[in-house]
Image (cartoon, rainbow, N blue to C red; front, side, top):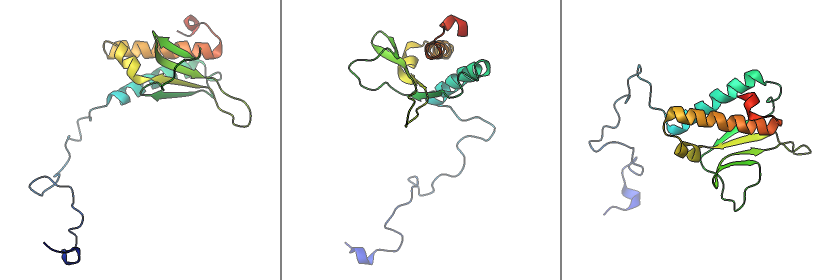
Length: 149
């Protein structure tokens, strides 16, 4: 066994290579083929599509509103009325802004995993995301959701 002082230079840290020592040789996907998108990226795009449509119609009313996506809702024993639930599972939450020293803009948070679980396919998920956002925006603005849809 050799002591640490007698090691060859550069052997202290091993580079990531395959079992033949060659490593990756090139791109895994040709440049002309789009890479696979994750479920989270697809979900984010669905949210963005709905929000952009609403912002075109209600630019002034939604100028300070933040939209966010979280994977799962936080662990709380009791949810306030600002939470949109299906049974006892939260789907989205409206956090009204707080004026004062720490001005916080209003925020609508969608919970990705519960929404994905309730959808049969991507088209159903798009409809569900749209409906949830419409309901939360209507709640924020004090309107009827049918007026926004």
